[in-house]
Image (cartoon, rainbow, N blue to C red; front, side, top):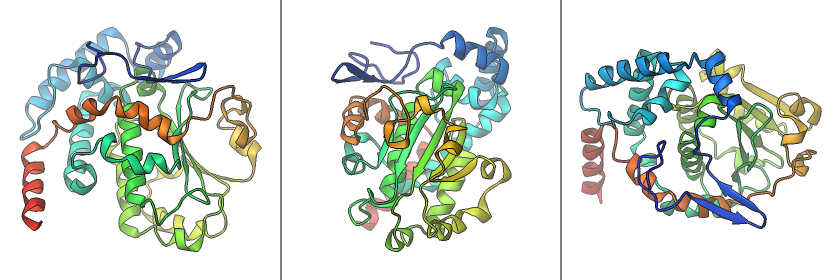
Length: 318
């Protein structure tokens, strides 16, 4: 079965049954609301779209050593949308996206859900089953009292985020509306704070600012204790203005959070009224596992020669 936004063929659309609720990726074409936002915010019209795809294809053919699915229009669109259909910007984003994978080879080497069970079993990383009032996906990270830092590393947390955002990139509606991230830091301890290092901070900031082909519309820090200031001090000097302006600190002020993410879109634990089940990490894992071949296919593209060199170096060290 061929799904336009996916690189791999699937026997059936990946989904998991949770009681009366079906957890799945939304791979359909844009809703009327999505089409309206795409036109108004991203300049997306059939004419601009067709011209941008052709221009991007031509530009990519001229990039040395880069292997990408040049015949796949839907793959092109996932990079064109965050760049408002400016082909040159999309080409530069694609190169940064794949250069980042080379630079951080240890994080990306054969990255797929089947090899990252631990992060999902820890249940500190989840995506809300519902979207927010603006159609955005909501990713939740609980890096306080729920996080057993001796059992799961921040590198594993990073890999889990990459797997989620790669999945989000498959959804046309998410390509248009983007995503918001909630960091629940309730109960963060000094021992946990020490896990954050300058190299980790730089990798996260570089990733978010330069290498994520998705519109990150807001990063919301909630329930943070004073010790979190020590953690944020690592990130602050390397944040550019655009991203810095999208990081909002709420503490325990729920009204402040609701002014960005509607109460109707939040679970009861945050004072919300959303009528959707809490999706646990292992339930997301079950769904992502059904897409393992898609991640394998994603790993077949990029600066393959450089990745092979990195792989050979790693094997020689063993």
